[in-house]
Every structure is written in C-alpha cells, then in structure tokens.
Image 1 (cartoon, one colour):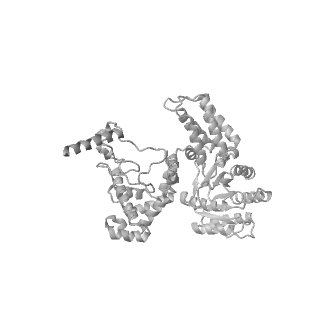
Image 2 (cartoon, rainbow, N blue to C red):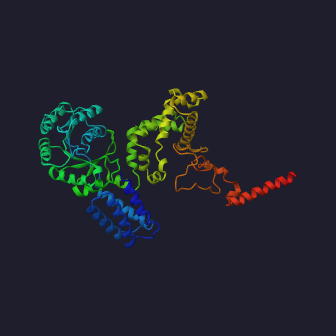
Image 3 (cartoon, helix red, strand yellow):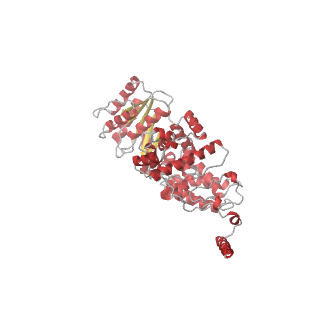
Length: 513
C-alpha cells in the first residue's frame, strides 16, 4: 500500500547524496520533496505541515555525525517522526479483565463482519483465548448468516440471533451465553450504514451502555483515504473508541488514512487487514511500518511469520538434515508450502532490508510464482520414496513424472539438477570446509539474466581458489576460470587479445609450411 510513498521518499533522499553536510538549503529542498510525497499519499494537510515543521526544527539543530551523509541524517529524522506520526509505541488490546468484550463499529461495507472473524482467529492463536461471536447486525441481508459461516470455519461458537431481535438485547444476552459456553472473549459485530445518522449512533450507544466493552474498535476501509479519518473522528466523538482497524491494506490505497488517523483522532491504529484469509490480520507496529515506508524492510514481522509456521524443534531438525545432506524433496515441498503461508515472494522480499528496490528493478521477473507452482507440481507427481531418495529417479521415472504433471522431461531434469546443487550449497554453508558448489539458477530467471541497471561483476586479480569460484553458475555471471587467463588479468582490451590470438594462429600455419 505504501509503495508509491516509498518511491517518492527514496527519490527525495537520493537527490541529497554526495552533499557534504546538512544546511538550510538542502534541508528545505529535501523536505519539499517529503511534503509533496506525503500530500500525494493523501495525508491530511495539517498533519503534513506539523510533521515537516518538526523535522525541520530537529534538522536545523542536529549535530550531524561525520560518518553520515546529509541524506542518511535526514532519513533518520524522518523515520523517527514517522514512528511518532503512526502512533509511537504499539498499542495492544486490553485483555486484563475476563471476559474480554470487544465491540466493532464502522460504516457499512468497511469489512466489520470479516474483521470480527479475523480478530477471533488472532485472539485464539496468539492470546490463547476462546472467542464467542455475536452477530448484532439485524439490518443487512445475510449478515447474521455470514458470521455463522465464518464461526463454523473457525470452529468457534456464535450467538443464534435473528433479524426480528433488538441489537442491544442480543449483545446483553450473548454475554450470558458466552459464560455458559466457557468463552472468555466476546466479539460484537454491530450494524453499519452507508452514512452517519442519529439512529445508528443511538443504537451503538445503547449497546455500549448495556455491555460495557473494554475495547471499541472502529473498522475503516483504507481505500477511502481521508474520509475514513473524518468518519473515525465522528465515531470517536460519540463512542470514545479505543482504537482503529484498517482493512484492505494490501490494496493500492495511498496510505494517507494510516498516517493521519492518530494525529486527527488521538486513537492508535491497532490492527491492519492484509488479505482475504482469516489469518490475514496483523498487529500494527508503528516502528515497523515506518521502516517499510522508507524502504528499510521489516525483518521482525518476517521472523514472526516464519516462526508461526514452524516450531523451534522442527527448525533445528531441518537444519541438521541440511548440514548432513539429508534434505530431500519431501522436505523441499513442505518448505515451499510453508513459505506460501507466510506470503507471496514479492511481499517476503519487501520485508528484507535493501530488497524492495531490487524487486522493483526486476520488473516482470520479480515474482516467479509460476515457477514455484511448476516445482510443486513436479514433486507432487513423484512417489514418496522418490521424494525421499531422489537418486532413484532414473530416465523412465523422469518420463513418468513429466507425464503425470504435464511438464517436459527437460523441466523435470532442471528441477532435479537445481535441487542437487542447492542441497550441496546448503551443506557447505551450514557445515563449512571444502569447495563451494555452483549457485543454482534462481526459479523464474532465464540463464544469463541480469537485472536492469546492473552490470556483471568483473573478475578480480588473484582471487583465491579457496573461494570455490562462488560466481560460477550465477545468472549473467561467467565462470571466473574462463575470463582470459593471465592476459585478461593484465587488463588488456578485447581487440589486443584478438590480435595476439591471430598472430599465434599465423605463426602456427607458417611452421606447418
């Protein structure tokens, strides 16, 4: 969602490279670009003005470290202020008193019902609570049925409300039913309208008075931009909300709502919806979001997602198998499926510091999801014995596997070859010693591919053989053993080398005569 803002800010800081120190002029130039980037991202203009003023004041009085360039210093100041703008410290839910009662409010179509189910899933998996869902939207067609379907998917109980019941009565009675079911987290899915009106606010106020929820979360569609902030302000004035949930953050919204909501309402953004699955609800961390906006990645979130798919004991067992070269195709298939649970390759790469820009430069080659699909199809066409012992796969078996998955024998051969090289490389990296094998081709990258704007690395004189020629086999990288020998190391041009080669040929021909 922040891609456009990230690009603009990166361009603004790039222009400051090469300058010796911060002064009034380059600070003004840099902050002008930052201001335009924030305004284009649909951030509230008053919020932008205050943000720029604070950064300018700090930049003018900052003691610039000698080891930092002006651009780096300004990035640090902008990062710190972005963290404050997004809410400072991460604000969690109030889970001290049981049962935890959470009321979700917002306009119609903002995603409240789905968010109720996502939040129930999060409370159960992360906080080990037993949720109870309460469908209190008696006006929207099929709203009650939708929440019951989601509750069934999660395997959690839901209150059996009907459209002829009073919403406040539903919520009050649901607290008793939840206690009988042994649930310690109650989530109220309230009604919404297409616009703010007095009957809606009266109904929500009545539910709040009778149920006394610890948390009142305002759910807003991130795609609505500043309208979401305006509506949040109105809900906060009547209900005193405790936090905000922004949905559809995985879309192409410009991010202005996320950056403005804390400053305008005084309430923190607590959760963000990042997809359509019930697991696609993330706790919002201001510092991590600021790092993503500035293209610094988000390693902590990546680690947490990875930990959520694998236990510590299982990870240690897998590392041991890799070190002993016992990592087989069965393990490879399992890890590919686990990676899918974390997210797409593009989203994973963007969380790695410095990789966001590289992903963009690679253009259409950036997400080789189809290559992973092919690899999964090929491995799935093998028997369990073949996956555990790839050495058993002979020519006839390869033909059978190719026919079973609809691929060619060549594609099966390529997968097996790349897997073998990858296995050796992992063993070398984890075990140490010996000659390092060639790097396998990256899935989705054609042989000889070089990302736009990059150049193949040239050979370096005196490169030790102990390095095992690590660049051999890399896309676009020639084997260092074929770089022209001693003459190439002397820096001779191609024309000179060609002339010498021609003279040698002529000399040989004269000797034969």
